[in-house]
Image (cartoon, rainbow, N blue to C red; front, side, top):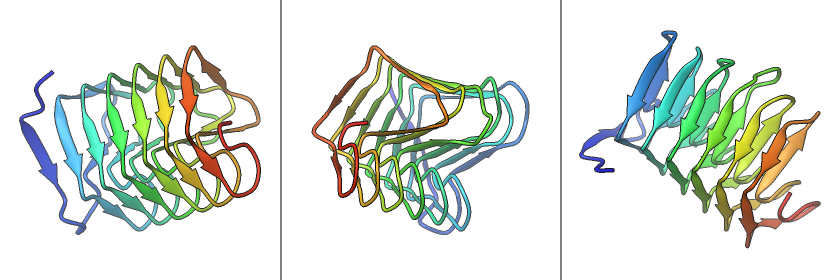
Length: 170
């Protein structure tokens, strides 16, 4: 899928803040976002869909360097999430507590977080399915994926991730 539209936040702000129900973001490159809270690249506050996007080189001072998902019912599909950083959890993608959302058919690689979930931090009832999660790094637990209070990781390849404490892969 061609990604001809580019949102380059130039480290001045978050790339996209989705604050409308049923919004769709399709086929964008979202790069160089910077958030002092969550979601350096994309903050999905309300139920929405992000598909066929490249989310790259974004930073967050809290959770979800690439994408932070708060809106239950949200979907991230067919995206590449890479080279993002979060100061707390989910270098690539982080789900808010009590969020029921889906990440599917994504490639999540080379993301970093000092807390947990270098690639993805899953909370409670959210689902990560049919994804390639590789070469992510965390100082804490869950180099590729951190699962807190449940969540589902299904039919995914988790390879080459690193954690300083527990669970290099999951």
